Image (tube, rainbow, N blue to C red; front, top):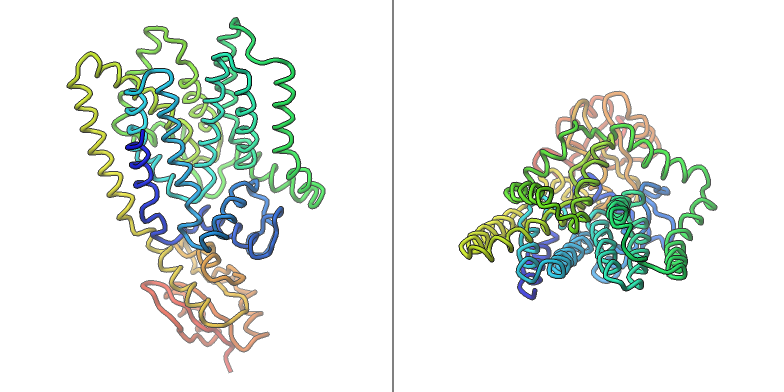
Length: 459
């Protein structure tokens, strides 16, 4: 177990801060946490100095604590995901060891460490790593509950509450999987007493209700429309933010992200059905519910199905341990594949320089921060598809940012130029020629295909 912990720590923590936070959830969540910390907004999330209702607050609170201790850096913004990843790997070991022995636990932990799609998101500062941790704490609590100790129900309720505070209804996959397993075991003895049930529900309510009730009282329909209407209902029934994918989207993604272990996973599934090993139905329910639920949801991203990877690793680990007991050469072969896979994962993650354009944006944003101008910073995109966005610039510049797009949506920039002697603009180099038709553009800094310029009105 010590070796597994060291391997996970080295993979998830080494050079964690390399590469700028890119123009998607990572830069958004880090900026929200930074603004909450700097503005002392302990309950209301803010992004670009406006209330932000996209996600519950747990990730922001954790990142605020990390920023307070370590400074506002990319490393601190990703630290909670890395530590959650280490905890998940150790939890996978503990769960598999409990049901199939220490060899299966080690196999399962190292198999998970070599699933590169899982590894990638354990080094990204988004909500999903914490969510997966809480889901498997629920599953672990249920496994212990089945052994006859009703007190583990409190762990299940606490993990459910924290999961809701982390990513809202996305936590549903574990309760549904647990419910399915319990249904097929309903003839077993009673798992909890009435008193334990109501105390668990009270714990859940204490964790979940206060923040949600306060936000409804403070913002009313505005909060409900954004938090529930757009980011839950619309996400379930519409393709948001350019996401795309058919019914096999996640099957293909797992086929790449869990290669070659998914092949053994299929074998383990066939064996589970053939031998009728229903005592292992809980993990297969977790895999099946995750795949089915997110296949039905219209908005699709590969990190949505991260909860199935630990369950898949546990089933593969159990299969490898069974085979290696019969033929030792299989165990040696699996260990060799794991070693190669770990080396490949380490090289791929650690030497990755980050998203190129995000690194460019960070350099220009830091130049804008150092310029001494306290006014709004404009980010202007040219017509058509562009790599330039405002999220990374916002996080690193420490200034209010205004997004504009040429040619017909620059009215805010034009108004600012009329009111102030000059304003600062981050843009791609091809955009400067378009702006120069109406304004005076003076370059301040250039990095590859983008630049920071001071823009003023023509005499």
